Amino acid sequence: MSTNDLPDWATVVARPDTIISGSPTLYSPGGFSDTFTMPTGVHILSIVLQDWPDVTGLLVQGANTGVVYLNINPSQSSYQHQYYALIPSGADTQVTVTVTASVAGNMWLTGVSDTVAVAVLPQDPTPWQAPNQPPMKFGFTNPATNGTAAVIAAPGLGKSIYLHTMLWYWVTVAANVSGEFEQTSGTFIVPSYAVVAGQPYYVDFKGAKLAPDSGIQFLATGTAAAGAALLAGSVTYSVY
Image (cartoon, rainbow, N blue to C red; front, side, top):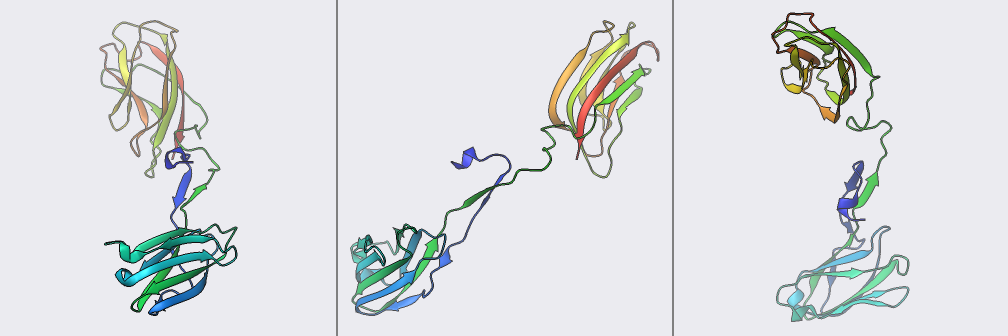
């Protein structure tokens, strides 16, 4: 599974390198050899040589299998001082590291672990996935011009409405009745015109988040007198 394939509820936990017991260790001139235990969960051995230009041999061999996992001459490199060996934990839990050098130096050994993806299934759906409030019915006659009619009260306490769906229709209509649903903070949501009685209007807002501490209201923009037409509808939403 690649990083892009992780579900929305997954978190990736980075695990720092594990210092191998006995590290750092001082290798002596000539041939030096020591056996190290690989920690649980570690499958890559990282080796840093202090004086790699004077090291003519670096051998990593499985203590159980005898398999050679790394066998190089660091002095032939003009820049590299860090080396890696893949150690299958199911085959070798210990490795023997042999260093051939002309002068003494320090060697650091650490175990490299993979990052871990942890998927935690939430007990409740996220705000945009499903409403956590029961459907709310609303209805009102049109206000006078620039007047408002409440649909959903502001939740308060810094919480926000996540708007899922809205269905409404004009029970009765009249000339010059129009307006728009908006947040109580004044931000536009969707318009509505009283043209045909009984014509349903439906919008799926897909869990759109409204401003904190903001409710929903209808703002009259037409010139019709208050009470000229009647609107009814229902809305589904979440509050978080």
